[in-house]
Image 1 (cartoon, rainbow, N blue to C red):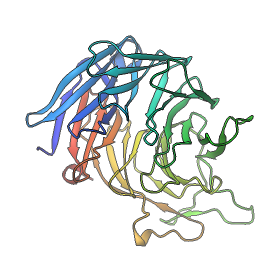
Image 2 (image 1 turned 180 degrees about the horizontal axis):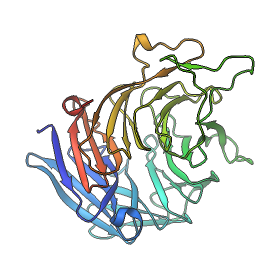
Image 3 (image 1 turned 135 degrees about the vertical axis):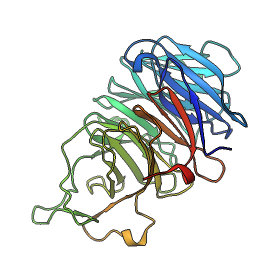
Image 4 (image 1 turned 60 degrees about the vertical axis):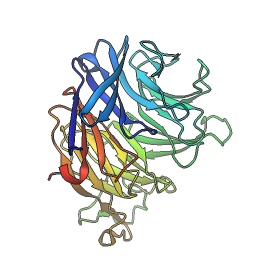
Length: 359
């Protein structure tokens, strides 16, 4: 197989791409006409073969599509987050129309995530400031978690089916534990200020980065994306408008970031930890690049001393897109280097990170 494959989504600007958890040769892409501002959306089901990438099926929606998630219990089903506040469940064996429609959000649904452990629920987050949990067999939601701010990204923990995380426009990472009682906080157990330095006594000097500079935090800005580390069950990476990728240890909500990664020239739109290496993650940004990083946790020379925050290392970048990069995903199968990325240039690129990364 060539080291870079390309497919086009004519007339539609992709927002999200996901590899199938069942097949290494199947991809799904959620896209929108007119950059998601106005118009309809289209779900592309793509197949990878000896001749490249082929469009196998398409499903149109009346409003934009912003995210998608493959079902964990049915290899042919896919949930799509739509701009009218709905989530639509498509079955590849059923042409043209969704098999279920879930519509409770009052504004755009911007992310959707299937529970990878129990597999019988999925969640959605919306600009209406809520996260909702759903069963694929019920049209009404099972639970609503209030956030209070535009919630761009929400996710189940891949290690604990009761833990839910989300990031929002107020620059906070929130954690919900469904095992806790329903009280005034609606299962909220932690609220981490992404932009703040570690909470330390006033007499203590500010922490410094491992490159020697002082870390005083930053101005709060919208957090657009986050992802759980697939190997470390307490580590979450965040990214957003301030162009900085940070990792946090949820065991220490006031401890500030454990690592920062600097390099994107514009907002970080999507993050995805590698399923093959505990210290590697990929990021897609509005600077039209996809970058691969090490957070430094596996490098002896990057060992974290007292009051020191690691600076992660950029392993390389892929700059073949010609518009905003909006989605990135790792293939679960094979040697661990295959990545799919999408951008507003109406292109889907599947590439081998081992050979195409460039500084």
